[in-house]
Length: 344
Ligand code: SF4
Image (tube, rainbow, N blue to C red; front, side, top):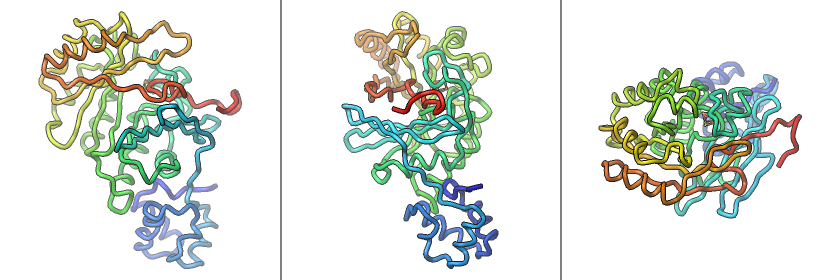
């Protein structure tokens, strides 16, 4: 069986080095080849002996890079990439260029088990966790990889439902022996699985984005069944224990639906719920998905909502919509089942 090297931490690479009879320092050499030189074949690791490289191959170790198998380009410059995911399920990543920023939205799972009613990924159910290799491959294997400035874990899946792989990927992304990114370039989004979110908060310095969508528990539970297990009030209480006033940023995502969660009473309740927290609110225009009665709020309603939150002292912004024409916008990702559907 093939074992990908990308996604491995330095510690894991040390084990690989030991297994093929190399000294521990060879782990750093391999990390440099994988994450700095970005080679795609172990044969290119020319400071490892020929015998060691042969041994790596015999043991099934491969770099593990896989190029995207399809892409769709939006008129606004956004590009959606399709990768092999888990089993027969593909996954998608979205590259979003924006002036001097270039952000990649990565997936952490094939499908999702959180079942949010407004999300195409949630509708397809859960098909498996990506490994750290599957996550890092999205970062390294898009054509624009070297130009990326930011990474958001907001693609398919709930990152806190695949915590180990996400933490490992963050270590590879931020470690000096890895991609050496600042954690300030990374945002992890979550519906708020509390125990896992606490671990993420305690062990990393990445920015946090919480999917809120309603300030009222019963209403949120109707949109996001996960509210029954992880109440937003408890998530907010957890977040109050952390400092978001300096380097680390906290934001709340709020998709706006016409007549559902977009009146000023909702805005006031959001302000009450989040009072005292150093946070931003991202108001997101809903993208209509098939077989859903949910409709987007009007621009005027969104602006009134934003203004009300701003009056209450919050930084609230209406997020520009990107990639809607290629089904790459928020909540629209749905990697296909290869057995069931033709590829885009
Ligand atoms: Fe999962 Fe996020 Fe979609 Fe909810 S919105 S179903 S957590 S991918």
